[in-house]
Image: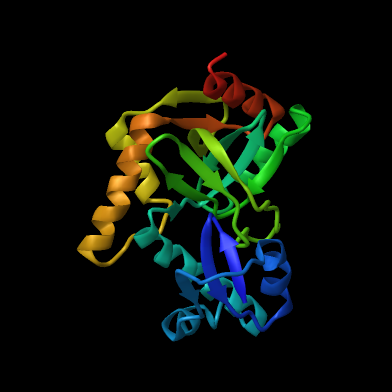
Length: 228
């Protein structure tokens, strides 16, 4: 099967219902530039944590996709991407920190907002702008949409007893991004990734936020990231 994900033609032949269902809206045609299949090395690593063959296929195809897009000028960030008024806001944090809870508050507060991808949005740094794309690989929630949206800002969340947000330096932003994506093993691919990240931090404001699991946290992040 041919799919178009983040404006890339991708060949992928899922066997199980989950990946088939989540990829359905990306079905396309044409010649693929990327071919994805589960890597046996990945399968051996996830077999204990994911005993279901369906789950292993989903995880391993996600990993293969995330590795291969680096050579095509794109990378993923472990984040929940929410869109409001035609702009994408990415909230990144380790699993269990509350990024999906934070973007759920955005959807509650701001009518018309929606989740572009709840786990692995794809960032495409182009010369004119930085865009964020949905992908079939959306974690447990399957909240994802097949489209690209201009990136407004990225915020890295930490749990806290009060809500505080501040813009970070470019060097600190690079370190935060590297900690929340796949790190290539080859020097060539690492240089490609760093070049893309440097383009992002030079064009987009990056923030770090201590936040509570309350609506006020989303109100604060919106005001600051929107520039109000």
